[in-house]
Image (cartoon, rainbow, N blue to C red; front, side, top):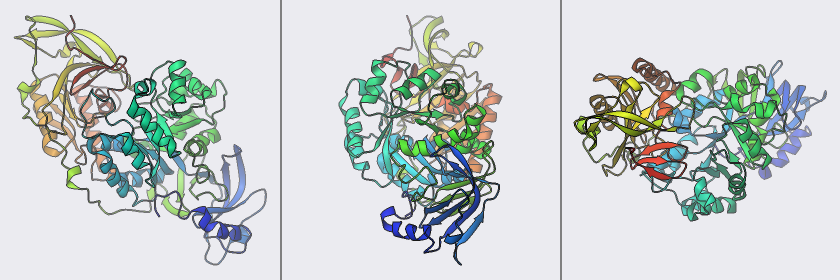
Length: 602
């Protein structure tokens, strides 16, 4: 029964809970003398006892009442004197794939930080290998206590016609997935132009989700708060994590949309968005917390939802209010409040014992009443998972890459020409559509490191078509080359650099190892993160992957880049559903007008 919302359905054990609450049967576990973070009333209740049976809460001893009557000879007693008892933490929107480890390893990493449930959108592996890969990944994580609740990927491909992915997801696929035990909703509907235009497949995907009484999550990046936002919400989209300004948060809340306040490794929005709550003093019950994308070093060094809570409190959000965002608000958003999100009778006994509500240091974690982590360590482990070979051999370029592959030809005379350039900024998912002057020599447009102008190529890697496109980047300031198959959302092979030799070596290295990330400078591989599962995930421990990623970050710095988690920013240069300019294997895409753009500008 692991990874269903509780060990037992309430209808099956409610009689036992009644008897335990009245002292007629002993509890399995009793937590004593805790300070309860009561998310239903926004109170701290001192010296509370919590009796647990059948994986659920049976009784709360409040206001001087105790659970002594629930204790029998075999009852496990936990003394929580001096500790806070909070509901298990929930991440309202996360892509496990960004951690670069398999789902079961991800669970081992985040549960000790108090995370008991996640709303997982696996659209990364779905773009590579479809819902069949999602089924396999779900089987892997179901071997752990983590409640990994799936939101079916809605946009595979993210923008049909503008890129080539490894697979596709249709409305019929969404309908079938809604019967899965693990599915609680539809993943972020990035195709908001399709919704606004009433495009058939996008609308049908939402319809199938609504028919199943599941939640539809969104991805609304534009600052328009009138007709389009109203229309997007009216279509059935009721949660969104793409807010960049306090006014975006307020506008969505006023229209009844859940706002998922995001703080990932690279997309760090919390500090800018928190004033929407703290300065305006508005009701935050429609606010949840989410990571979206966390790279492994962030999890190992800083934690998971506990990290979000620490930051929220440091931004002035009331600690109990912050806990509500990570518990009851999230559960309510996904229509799960009858099972999860609060420490109240009948609910799943997902409980976190904390030292304080400032640093949220986690002492013990219970899922369905079982102690699953203590003092930062998981009390469970899993054997290596047998990933099918079709998911570990996904590099199929269809061409032999050499330095000449990276020549950008032109009919312009020697001198210079004006080219369209993707402008990247640290910590932002938004890019700029720039026009810069690039050198021309012998019929070839060249990179120009003196003005931070480097080449970028995207190669289709799923079907062996050999399709690829070229462009330019500004903002990374590197000498050398970088390549990665973590390239949202199609996860084709993305290569960037200031010279063709290093770019070719980087591309060939990933083609040979099955995918991942590599940094090359002057013919030498500086760092390599091998990700053979769909070109996205490692089969190793997160600590080892984090160390490799640390070496990658050091290589970026050596090459001249000062961005935080720069490979995450690099990985969205091909994300053709977020403004303004992106590049796919088919060319430049203007993500405001959804038109292809030429490389050269007259």
